[in-house]
Image (cartoon, rainbow, N blue to C red; front, side, top):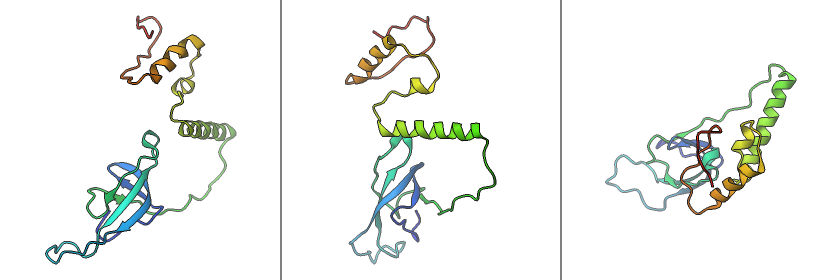
Length: 152
């Protein structure tokens, strides 16, 4: 974010190489120092919230004028429709939207196996669920049948 522009609430910003939505902007109540010739106005505390799946809801608090590399994304409109997609493409899009909504709804859900197109057996999921519920999980080995790994 530059010194000239302060993002308003609801704007899309890129901070620390991630996409965020600004939820709050507060102006500093401290007076501008007469010795600081680089600053022309008060600083702003910006509170963005992550919109990416891997950090959904993660909040930051940054000084907008001091955050290096931060950018305010330009507002854009929806694209103009140029035609209709074939039914199979629309169906694939709707499936992807449904799976995206499911993965965002419950962060504790195990969805990788459902997205991969493999056949699941109850005896395979039982040790996995127990492992994930343990206090500290470092590594889950999941490869082809036969290499000799043991989960239980």
